[in-house]
Amino acid sequence: MKYVGIDLHKKTIAVCVVNKERTVLMRQRFLCVDVKGIVVWFGKLGAFEFVVEAMGTYDWLVDLLEPLAQAWVLANPGKMRVIAETAKKTDREDAQTLAEFLALGMIPRAYRPPARIREHRKLVRYRVQCRQRVSRLKCQIRFLAATYNADHRQLFQPEYLEELQQRSDLTAADRFILEQRLLDYEEALQRMKTATKHLQQFAKEGSEAEQRQREIVQSAPGFGAVLSEVVLAELGDASRFGSLKHATAYGGLVPGTRESAGKGKELGITKRGSRLLRWAMVEGAWIAVLNSPRWRGIYEALKKRRGAKRAIVAVARRLLAVLVSMLKSGTKYRPSLAELKERDARTERRQKQRRAAEAVRDAAAVA
Image (tube, rainbow, N blue to C red; front, side, top):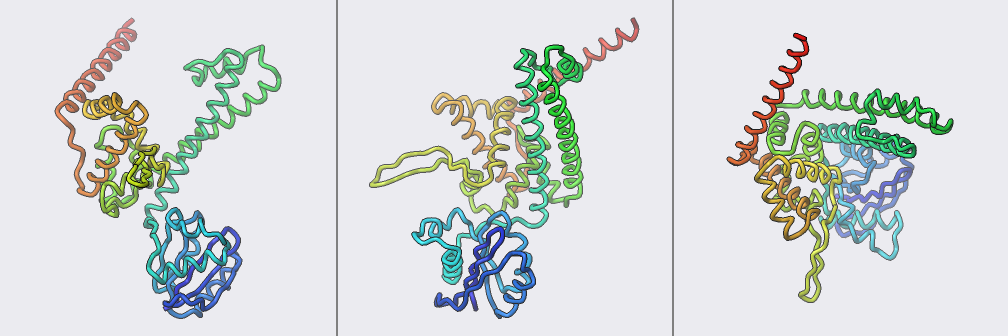
């Protein structure tokens, strides 16, 4: 069996082949565009396993070589510190180090989601990018309005945007920039709406098990349709986590530690793993704190001891552990009695507001 280490870059590939004794058998270098040459060369290797780091553009290479190889491993670049810290770091040496670690069976593995989850992630992340672009444009328009003391909460209502455009004191430059910003804003809104519809259609086409997962996540306080899609896409298969600590560490929500000579120091959260999952959990935590007596009590108790920022991160960490437990067991969230009472009270308030609004409309119609 040959063991192949591949150091993949945007334009080139460095390859090193070793045997079980870690003796270098051959080296090769390819241009990424030379797909035919790559297939021919690897096809002549015989029985081999290969390893490549989980960088942004590895998918095409794995799809190309997987049918030719006996097995393959996706390496976690964050844990391959031996490559990053070596005194002599070249593509040639990196490929050899990967090959040697593969021969020893010491590659720290990274998770590669199934094709369905990879597609889900792409759609979720694209929608988030669209949302960020909308927010960025709104901030730019608000800043321009603020320079004329015209920014307020209802600025993006059509009549107020029209009023801003018609101001006589707008300079020619600001008028032009405002027109362009508003065109970009409308386009960005349309792109976000289209992305949302496509994501909803993608969700409807999922299997029964996938639909069940959505129902489970949305049963938890703080997680509606948008946040649940983010959690499911970024978390992947919840059963792959051996423990809840592994799941919260994957979200980067666990504190780091430093210990030496028996003395330890607790650091801030590691922020490793999916940044988008971490954002979704913090957002969900805030909503849960506002709407759930159970989570509000946890937050308030933590806030007294640790402060508001650390408290909400701790709530997010606990919520993630709860979500993973629910997904692994296939059970929905079980609200407490206080949560049920508050939910009923909230429903009753909404019904009263709806009836009052209907009464006002009926009175106006009669008049």
